Amino acid sequence: MKINFAAQSMPTTGALVFGVAQDAGLTGAAADADKAAGGAIAKALSASRFTGKAHQTLTLLAPAGVEASRIMLYGLGKPDEISPRFIEEAGGKIYAALAQSGETDVAVWMDKTEGSPVDPATGAAHLGLGALLRGYRFDKYKTTLTDDDKPSLGSVTLLVEDVDGAEQAFEPLNAIAGGVFLSRDVVSEPPNVLYPASMAERAQSLTALGVEVEVLGEKEMEELGFGALLGVGQGSRRESKTIVMRWNGGNTGDAPICFVGKGVTFDTGGISIKPAAGMEDMKWDMGGSGTVLGLMHAVAARKAKANVVGLIGMAENMPDGNAQRPGDVVTSYSGQTIEIINTDAEGRLVLADVLWYAQEKYKPKAMIDLATLTGAIIIGLGHEYAGLYGTDDDLVANIISAGEETGEKMWRMPLDKGYDKQIDSDIADVKNTGGRPGGSITAAMFLKRFTNDTPWAHIDIAGMAWSTKDQATTPKGATAFAVRALDRLVANHYED
Ligand code: BES
Ligand code: MN
Ligand code: ZN
Image 1: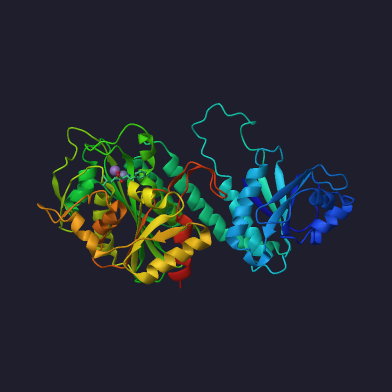
Image 2: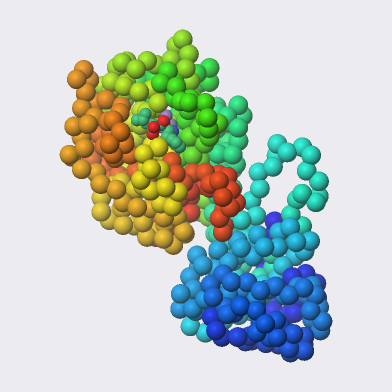
């Protein structure tokens, strides 16, 4: 799908969209088009329930007097409530409404809306981003698609006075979209295709953007003493990997910000095996690593002026004669011993070693991990908010507000010493499950023991990494949750 920016003149073909503020009627170019159509647009408006409420639409097919093949009015709601995110959602919804319509191009007229805090050039860029993000498809394994099954819409054109300004504003957004797509791609791949070594190959492709990529195999991790991570992968035929991606866009010697991702490329539960129904979903148990990979693409592609390190722990959790058992005690890279109570609580084991490695090796300003860590967070927050934990109030507040900007909602959960006793072990330093009560919280308390007091946040994305429904800027499937929010966090707080 192509996003174009062009000067404002009435298009001679395709669909044409005008924004209409709530109860404001037709103004500017929409009023001109209505005049050319002999008042047909205003007549249709008054015959309908369209008032310009946020995201309301009204479509007219082939109105006489205008050359466009269809006119869509798009409700902008109250102008002072318009935000870049609102405009992205509009872009996504316009794309979705016309994708299969037979139209090949849609032009969106971007006028200054009185009272809107968003200028038209910025608005055009965000509208383009929203459409681009919604237009994502993962159909490489569908071999019988015909042209009729595919979207007719091939481009979205933003008609804007300041074409240069809009193109400039779009450039970094387009880079971020590339990161979102990379993330969605790896999470969508089936688990026979996407496993630790093939994830490492995808990560290697970031070297083209200037990212340094380092891959630790099982031998290197044994030498380092990654007993927790290696235990998870020991029942798998696939070699476990830790992948480190470094973007050095900031000053040499400045401490980086580290992002750590859970990359369990398939989670059967191991010996504590999961039920069969729905187990195929566990291909996306590497969603945290997918977000970190996409984020690294985004910051590199837009040349962020910051030092950013992404570290992803990759393993496959399988039952096998060599698999880890409930009752095993492993020694983590930190030196702390862990009693394995349930081999299905494997994500925290992977993260334990990678978090310790990140803080020890990079002495980061802050460290943020993402993981599809617990079913319990889905019980608590459903599919609207990710669970956010953190030891630093400013870091947590900054993550939440970055997410508000990008439409990725996160809700702070408690990290409280009181929960700690649930994971104290009789035989080792800590055990890997804390029972059902507060299951997402005790998982976070477990991770906290491996952060060594580095300012840290943890995002449990189990309810957010995959969507079974289309959303405004995310078609159903892999969401790339928090790629955009964390890119915003870097832009807002870690760039010079
Ligand atoms: N990957 C799962 C968590 C998960 C469940 C993600 C459903 C997405 C959808 C994780 O490894 C897991 O199995 N967690 C267990 C922990 C329990 C054994 C303490 C869980 O949440 O049930
Ligand atoms: Mn599990
Ligand atoms: Zn898991």
